[in-house]
Image (cartoon, rainbow, N blue to C red):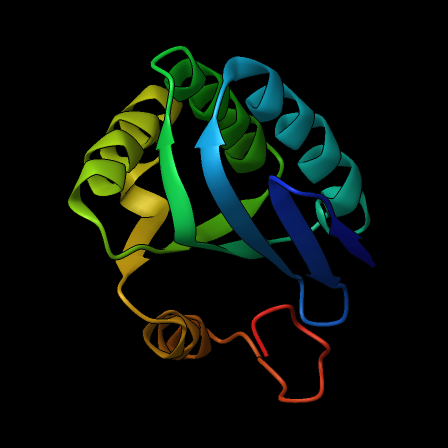
Length: 141
C-alpha cells in the first residue's frame, strides 16, 4: 500500500511488517491530525503482531508547538499496537530537538532511534531481525 500527499507519504511492507514514511515541510496541528489518521489506517494490516516504522525527516522543516503532543499521542498508540521500533532519519538540529520532545510526549524514547542516513536506519532494522528488500517498492528506494 502506498499513500502520498504534499505533507507526508507512506509505504507499507506488510510481509516484513515495516511502515515507511516521509515527512515534508512545516507542520501545523491540522496536518499532524491528518497524518495520525492516515498512519493508523495504513498500519492496520500489521498491528496485530510486532512491527516497526522508519520515518524520513530529511525534508521536514519544523512543527508548531501544538503538534508535539499530537505526535506524542500517536507514538503512544503505536506502542500500544505492537510497535517494536521507530526509526527516524534526521539531519538538522531544530527538528532533532522537537523530535526528542515528541519521544517524551509519547513515552517511547526507549524504542526510538535516530540516524543521519537511510542506510544507517536500515542497518539498525536488519540488526533487529527485519528484512528490507531492495525490491520492496519502499519509498526510500
